[in-house]
Image (cartoon, rainbow, N blue to C red; front, side):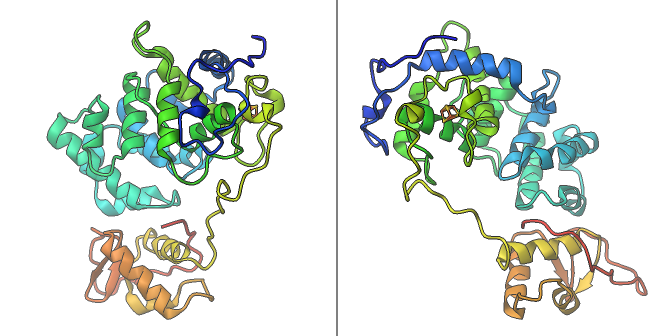
Length: 346
Ligand code: SF4
């Protein structure tokens, strides 16, 4: 282990304006942190299939979109299934929307499935069916934001983009600015810090920078977690600004409340989607009255169904509700019982 560093960097990140903690006692030398965290990652990273060198850029892109707001443990089986079923963008581009939404299952926020399919269609139309390699090209795809574009460019194509997710923001906040938590908003000061912390790219074509992105993300996911950081096994415990400051608790502004679930429109939308994923075509009244949510009002149920229709996640034909693209049932076909269908966020 490298000895502790108590020497400020030549340009202390905490003093560059906008930090929530501008009087941090010291800032560790970034290169020391890079080396330690990358070495830890090489020994301790989870062997996730989208990190396999043989994983295609499409596989990386699917994982990045699934992992937004959904934990790895829930994504893994869905990702495997999706990659077997739609191993290339062209496969997903041609799939019926109802199948795509059904296969999304309970990953939550199913608009991501629609956006992923729209991106696949744009890849086929504009890029010959191959995922484009630059962040700018990726950013131009429907539903691909700044984070996803940077992550795919970095993890699939080894372009040293600045990748910042919630885990990386937390590691930056704790290790470099001494904050307990980074707060809800990605501030301009945090953006500057993320850029300043990127390893130089000249000597190795950005290999270290890409490794830093992956390593810091994994450290935040496994060790420097939001609720109970495992500082005793952290590779940079002796360099960490938050530890050096005595591990202060989060300020009120830094604390983010967990998202409520019970009684929310998300819960009701999820319950409706769970019914529709069974393949049912159901009359509006029957669908809404049958939801196993006694606390939700008829107004809330109608509002949630209307929002799903607006989002393109459900379709209505003559008062019958189904997933978009579901074949019209022939007369005499049961409308589809839906009690007990598992829900998910929508
Ligand atoms: S020492 Fe603790 S707070 Fe600091 S980076 Fe490591 S896990 Fe996070």
